[in-house]
Picture 1 (cartoon, rainbow, N blue to C red):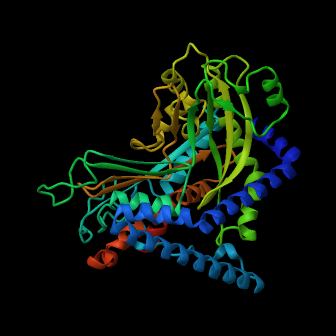
Picture 2 (cartoon, helix red, strand yellow; picture 1 turned 180 degrees about the vertical axis):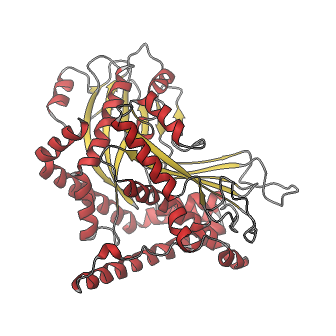
Picture 3 (cartoon, one colour; picture 1 turned 90 degrees about the horizontal axis):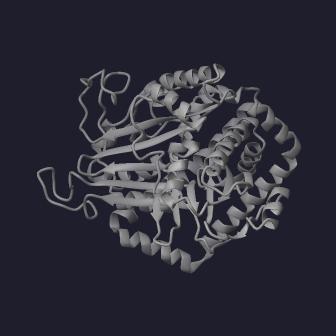
Length: 479
């Protein structure tokens, strides 16, 4: 039913959606160009990198080089594909590009075949009426070790399919990692947490400068979970439609009379950005996303879920959607983003508002409780902070919380790194395509990890030769 509704919306609003996608893309590119041309902004960004220390500066240089290599590779691939098509070949028959060995040093809880099987299991649950949409995720992990020469434990959760435990580099320096993420994958709801130590410094048996209990979270999230403004805050619904005008006339929009405005901005719907950014192929991806029936169905179901969540704690009739399925473009992906707002009931506390909506519907699916039970039968381990939330509560009652995605969790003391990634499964999902989407969402974080690895690789060149998963396993079981 949601797919049919989404198809009708696409038919009625295709031209409008395409125009909005182009407008957002143009605004994004103008902002990027303005930032690059601003000497003050450049000095501030360079200053923040310098404050993080020399390792961060070296890692950032490596990240810039990797980005340049990606642009060159994308340009060469596009030229090769065009030549191949001119000769009558099938561009889909070409092999996927080789993946960097340092990225391949991560192991996954579920390899490609297992993940695709779980996508199909989710679709069977949808066909049976158990759920409408399942947010399925995977977890990448690595721990520094020298490798076992093929003597790994084949039953280990983190071993590759050959039963070996590959050599991997140490955990990235947290400050360097976040600096690279902030510069190469900027996002509005990013966060950096360093818990259990001061910058990872300390002395112990495990080595100088590595406290065993330190945990760092390097987050470059583009998604807001929930925000509550001050009661006296003015809220302007920029994307007016007839319903929003009626809300404003009723005194619901604009200045809040008491409880403050709650706002959620769920993301559902993803398309890859093409290099160089802003090229015709990149614009075409944004246009495609704006009118994709499957992606709009994903987004619509979560919007409906969040309307219900907010309706439990908001003034009756105040919940509205000022922005529905707008395309927002980030460094690695285009996303479909909606905005759901409502006036908080003065009798409901800020914490109660969060309890009513947590966990974020975009990371569970719909209906929420039953879908979480389905997820619990499919995912073999906990997500940790991934798909949770980071933010603040203010003494004036306001709060702002993100959804923890596009994130690396580091334990410098034990040299472990975790990265979560996933996507929404619907009846329209292509199982192989869902695997590719999961890989796409992890690439920006993986690039930052690789840049940090390469910043210290000169002192330990053997890691790159020994590390990684070779051949078919590299493509099927790692990124």
